[in-house]
Figure 1 (cartoon, rainbow, N blue to C red):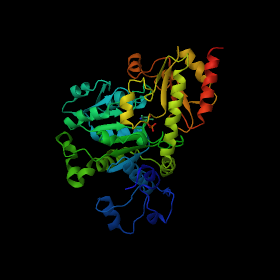
Figure 2 (cartoon, protein in one colour):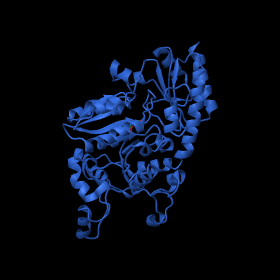
Figure 3 (cartoon, rainbow, N blue to C red):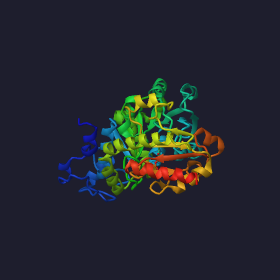
Figure 4 (cartoon, rainbow, N blue to C red):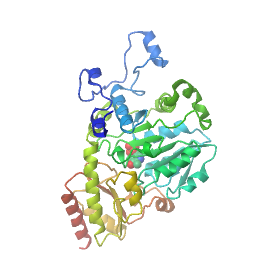
Length: 414
Ligand SMILES: *Cc1c(COP(=O)(O)O)cnc(C)c1O
């Protein structure tokens, strides 16, 4: 077993099985040919291993799945067309109409909308809980509860969930804990070590790292008992596949039938980015800390949300959980919305856009963009105020980033 940095580069690729190719080959094909009817039939019946159709699996995509499973210490993974697809596929596999699940209320806006509106239309009820009040999770669990969903660091609130404490409740009631670790990546945390059962990433963000392809992934940590009375509908899969019951159920049912597959070419770009995850995240964290420290010294800045600041209420938890690394997502407050607009409009280096986890520094005013469809109460719950700005600190020279911000602050006072 190699260490983390080595796994990022070598995990899952066997050159001998890929014509000695040292880079992951792109199998840009829809389907795979068989020599005989008997052969293809065995693969269809699951009696023999093989590729059939890229919507189900593909050799390029399989390498990303194996690499991510190794990195997260899971038993397997399924790569999806987007982070949203990873979340939808997971919830739809665990819950059917009439079931419910519990989610942290401090989550990515797209996920919130999926949980609150779309899932309800399918008869699946989501109960939202502020992750600061851990005891409330327990109160909401009933016999129809099929999952607990949290994010490692919520954004744009930048709050940190106590994963271990929440996992104890999940474990007590035998409910799987799903952790979306997109903001932290495996560089900051392996959620499995804190009791997570299913780990999700939007690979569109830091995993790819260069903002060039949308993708997602579902990883089964291998530590949940799927032979469980809460999951009667998993029984058949458990008897056949044991611990792989969840992943195989995902692949053979919701993933295959809903069609949320990723393209081999996007997978190639994501794998390319993943090789440098460790190097990039080291710099992201360093630049994040420097920009947070700069921001808190500015007289125009009312508050800075960044768990790496010693005065931040999540500092100790984040330090322990994320191994003394704090990422590069910061939010901060100015006097009002007009100030925020003026500030963002004055920046020249930082891009005003709706992504995060890119080599480039990205900035956005959440209340008027990514959270614009939410009502006042929802915005409050997500920590989105009219005077809030979110930054994803990139890999440029920190001097240039800070100078860009300095100029924008000077502009505010003109
Ligand atoms: C972006 C994001 C998602 C959704 O991922 P997409 O790849 O954009 O579909 C989910 N969770 C978090 C935390 C994200 O930042």
